[in-house]
Image (cartoon, rainbow, N blue to C red):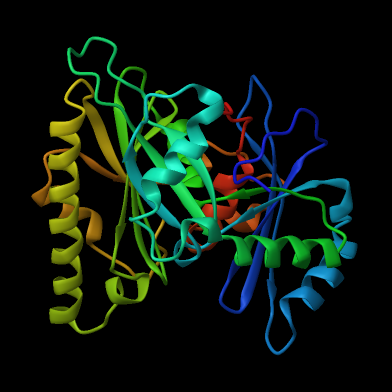
Length: 316
């Protein structure tokens, strides 16, 4: 199965996002003239049970067979690599990308499933250097997840990644003609994305977890803040050099809950772009699931909600 698989018809997406000890699910209804409506959001504890047992039980309770499933990988389950776009016809693109990746991967290139994300060119630029992102997941992992959902009789249609989920949320806050940076954290670490006109231009992982940002020891907490700041400064400088035709509007900080305080102020003092904390109630309708109005809930469901905003992707 391809990552980011394209569908022509579907009744609705149901996102399944697995974190250590928990499974998050979400479904969103998108209407042309109103905010996206959260129709379903829930979290299931795995505890001592197997993931397949929990999925099978909850799938029946949610009538999940009426949906088509998006499964979001976690950051340690794939590699995302920037490569120069090969000058080949579209039908030869993946083969050419696979050849370029053979010395960049930590496994044999034949052992991974590969999909590509295009990074748009500046139409006015003299130079035509064109980059793409190659997303690589081990075949063994893809097959295991397919079997997991097959056993639960869930129609898995898309394997997605957090970068695209975060891009989807950023699109709800975007200003026409301006780029937007977004930064989120979970227990695995931070994720910075920069998007423009609905396209993902830059992705960076930051090795600082939500737990480190909430460290009660002030010295340790400040050290974590400084590491985040340095990574952001380097990434924003790189973006400015690489894509100087795009002006960044702001940096949006995804909900962090009550345990992390002051990070937005710290970043605002050290970055050249304004920094704002995201409140998803400004762009989504939580009438059906009022629990998600809190910053704590939004932090936990952030990636599931972002993936549920999925629209059809252009297939390269």
